[in-house]
Image 1 (cartoon, rainbow, N blue to C red):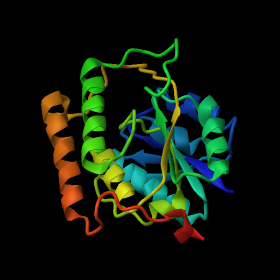
Image 2: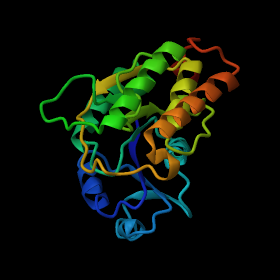
Image 3: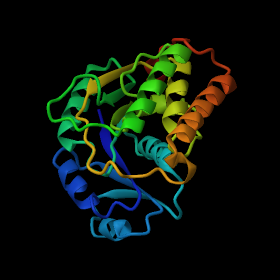
Length: 246
């Protein structure tokens, strides 16, 4: 089983060196998707030739970075790709927990959950983010029958061949809504494992109109409904996703 860690990064000069050093404790297979950074992110990567990279000439969005991570993993013949953020909100020390679940071969998506099991050192989530997360989690259950406790955690392990079956095009922060709908529509097996809830900088913004929580929620719901309506595969269908990979 071959796996790598993919790290989307946009202007992460403050956190990138420490994150890379920590991830290197667990794997030498690392790719950073530099999403049009204008700070020293590119220079940091220039000085780390052992780290692979995908570079966007301009900022294309979080969703585009994850899609490119899937494509990179497929092109380089990896079986799994673990995605994690570059702002130190995901602990590299939890990578072995994802790998252990991968080896059990009972899921196609292993999603970290910050709400599955409370941890005494968990940070409090910003109220608007927690509210939106809980709202979307409830809607995913109602519309897709998908039982999750955390809809937006970017710390995930993905079976690469299963990701290649998904039709993903959402480039921005609404990517998880399209992602979850496509996973259900394709009958992928989904499980959650607990991860720490860490907010190093709760003041981080989304940008533009998405900084308004009500607009952000409406946008997320619109993307979810559009994805459901566009799909020719009935929601709730269950097919042997991993069987198509072999």
